[in-house]
Image (cartoon, rainbow, N blue to C red; front, side, top):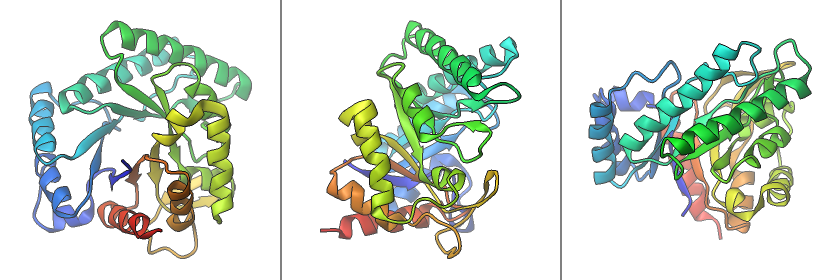
Amino acid sequence: MIKFGPSGSSNSFFDEGYKTTVEMPKWLAGRGLDIFEYSFGQGVRLSSETATQMGETFKAENIEISVHAPYFISFGSDNEEIVLKSTEYIIQSLKKLRCFGGQRCVFHPGSEGKQPRKDAMLKIMNAIEHTVEIKNQMGYQDMLICAETMGKHAQIGTVDEILEICKIDESIYPCMDFGHINSREGGSLKTSDDFKRIIDKMLDSIGEEKTKNMHVHFSKIQYGPKGELKHLTFADTEYGPEFEPLARVLFDYKLTPHILSESNGTQAEDAKFMKNYYWSLK
């Protein structure tokens, strides 16, 4: 089933007097949402005991939880120590994800740096293949790692690059961040046909299973000549993309992704808008 929820805590969560993520699942259930993404962006510092407690509260409210691995990951780095640490960040994230009772871990592949883009891509592919081997050796075969499309031109993470990464292993799924795609392509996503172009490419490249059950990040994002600049809210009228054209494609293709709002402070509200709009379609 298609699911909707916020990535991180909305301003309204704190405005209503809530303080800790343990309180989040009941709050989300009260708003009619289905999923939540917990970010380890600045490092995996959460204890296993706290993660297990949080997982129990999410399970009690039937709210599924995913995680975002640290932003420090750079599989294309020339520094071997950074590449090894990147693998370690994935494993650390999966360990806490297991405590949460979740299955999906989102990650950024890395950047091209000063090397040719094809060389950076090859390094990233090799490093991720090695990471999958370590992941499986440590007993996380059943857990998915989701490679995210990126919003800045210097980052590895075009639609085509992410689809190539997803071919490495059955456990690698795409995290299609349509705000990022729109940003790096200068506002390319306007109509349902624009989104359909991407979905059709996914079906041809990675097949029905990974396309149907992809991970999705969605927000409006301000962009410039080099791509992504700033996450916005659905109230913005200058930058896109709009959710409605994508919803039409998801509905017509009978896709069942997890859709996380990454709006700037209104994640829960914009996630609920997306859910309500999707289920209004016929």
